[in-house]
Length: 332
Image (tube, rainbow, N blue to C red; front, side, top):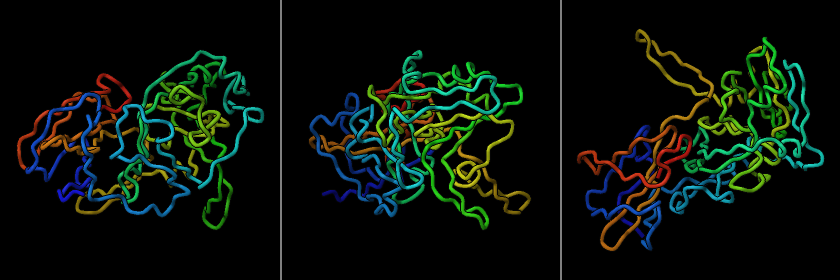
């Protein structure tokens, strides 16, 4: 439908929204809260490549359809690391808090629901989002609710030797280590200091309803400001350890590899995926009469402002609509 040279991948930039190749467009005024106002959505020319692993990348956000600051649960991206979802029921599920604690706990869903409720609106993004030609919509914003992770650790009584907190999920699969094939459960960890952040939740709800199976029922970790892999789904155990945990999803799969030059020599650095990086994306272009409206989102930190430029023109401020002042949620 469109012959405009608008591509999404060239517009993804760390730290700002860049709009390129639109010098022929006359821009209309900003819409309130990301609504289309009856305009015609112009599809991107560079649609994502076919998804070769639909059992792993189950669902992604369609940028051209984005019109809600809160991503509806049914539209929120889904990634299953082992290609399947565990089947859990309230009656046979419990959460264990163990390891280097004075009082190990075993909590039912009813136990967790009876505790003080805490809520946070937070954007979650897969660390691999936009890094692959078929993975461009692994991000979404939701309101999560549950109970404070720190309060559970405090009740269990972390021992002095404890420095690491591991989150174990019910999902599992085969992993090959050297010559051994092992069945490994999904597990991610963070330091005790990071785990005690008062914003972290053992979440039971998403957008005002119980977690769905796809999003981690009965309970999951929500660590606002961290990439999606740290927000472990189908949580079954929280373990306090006296050493760094180095399972597959800490030591191999969720590792950032960067090339550095040191004294003329190439050196590769390996870093576990952790906190979000500042990021923005133009989500869609809408035709408004004889003008066009460019709408986007920015996330990864509290957003003070976003600037846009057309071709080689000067930078000009975008109008921030929904999400201003939020600490962990994206801004439109």
